[in-house]
Image (cartoon, rainbow, N blue to C red):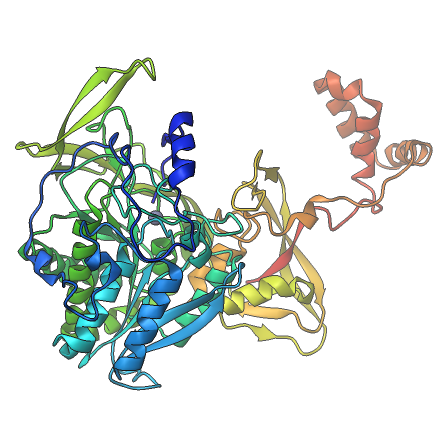
Length: 616
Ligand SMILES: [Zn+2]
């Protein structure tokens, strides 16, 4: 996960030299590598664990044993190639399983889903569909190993009844290139698997920031798959970083515990139906389910928790805006890989059962939320400085000590469950901007790239077959500011003030009208309003409006300015007042001339004029 910064990366020189001799190459066979003596020795101990779910693990006498199960320590996850070979074998052997490729990665690997269904080639749209996605962050790969076991058990070990009323689509590895940048040194805070993939893609992008801008081939492929298989429940499987605690499977969703969100009926189903049943099921199998929280101070574990941010660039934020029930699983990084994989297996199996029993109610909730057309759309969530409430928390005991390395007190987690429940303040998020919902937007044809992304989102657009001049509202951006550094391959731009101007504007043929009266209308507003922190503009994708074109020579503007003052005493008075009020301005001849230039019709009218218009 790592939404919070400040994680120390273990990069000791001696270790690196040793590592080079033992580093596992990506082409290495399925045999687990030798456990290096320094592996995880610096991590806090994990409390001993036993659970009924351990009985799910099959041994080598089973011809369908997975690489995770076959490893004596259950601390191994197979490579991309070996995973695919295993699923190809399963596909060939079981009529319930089929593989469907849905994209190609930047390094040329096929991205595929494994579909478990009784329906054959075409899934029955009346059946609820569970989409489980593993490996958007490939080092956090529990969902792949759990998915392999469960699909095997569906195919051969009597769990085919799970498919009577539900379909399952599993993406074993979304970020396939990152999965193959594998080593024992990818996730220093995480207890296994021994070899882990890398967080970012081959193009160094974090796919769990790409749910709005849709830059990356992997994300674009996912959007096409989601359009083909509309998920009734979408589960995005991760592993945490951050503080220690007793919970092994934590999960969350926007709108949890009645907090405001864009899909209230869905959140109410997840809160009221899924959560109690899921927690009961996980506990019955020996797991310790908990709500998803992020410590706000790594040096003071009891200082408080936050919700980790609810932005639409994350899967859960996008899901709430798109009315797709989305759960973010964050298995706890300090728990052993095996415990996490088994918890994920139980989670997926329970989700299938819940959809079979109560999927109809969830569909009704999706329909209710998809029909909402709020006039005002809260945006730009920021951490609320006031705690929302205090929550009981199953903590792990810790102490602090003077670290000779850091020169300050560091936390030392002791690996023992604290018998006393902690009471810790929880800080939610709150919107810092309210956007108004216009009737529609117009996107000009020459931004075909943005139009394509809207379509990829599933937004309905109405193309103009011929050029049209329309009365619209255009936005003049008053204070655009470039970010000081690049983020996810973009230089972000913020604008806090815009001025609306009524204009008659000509949109060329191929431009599109984007109505907000559609299920994805909220998403459209968040993508197209430049002040929205999740918009294309905010990602720096409309930087051309910042460039001003043409200029006027001093020998031309100076006499013109003098004529303007003669002709307009009010303008003259305004200028003179400015000279008096601002000595720096008065002492700057170019600034003085620029002041007049801006007030002539020669000045570039398109400068800072946002090219996407509103229809009100
Ligand atoms: Zn993650």
